[in-house]
Image 1 (cartoon, helix red, strand yellow):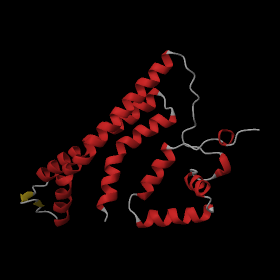
Image 2: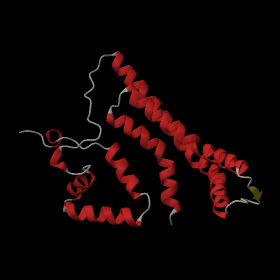
Image 3: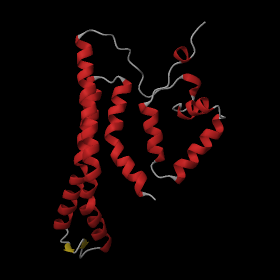
Image 4: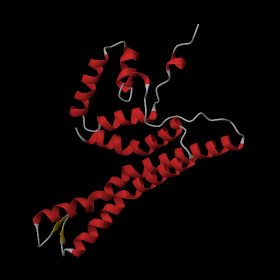
Length: 190
């Protein structure tokens, strides 16, 4: 039950970073920062495994089948065993990082091309929503879309965040990736 949300989160980290860069009109520094996060995300399982092997060697732990036994403390063997098995997460992290890096590079190339043609880009404020002071606006947008009371949508969101592991990351990604249109863009004057 917990594996499907975990796998979904692991697979969507890279594309989510690319979506953030595309929808937020980031600077070149922002693109490069997200690209470095994407690359680190792809190699992170191998770094954890390498660190686990270094800890096992340092504390004199011996491997028995797929488990490490440490002479000093029993809990350290379990931690090192978990770290040693982290390389299996690379099955999901590497494709996600590759897709994210491709999306970020395409977005960066388009941004550089646009700056050479002197097309004006309206910068967006990255983390601030001023309309109605609604937190992030995701619940407000859903309540407007389905004509529901906002309090009901908020309650369901909190319940889902408690019941489904990883739902809060999906909510945070929606907050970053899908900006809310301003009031003037939603309702034409006339």
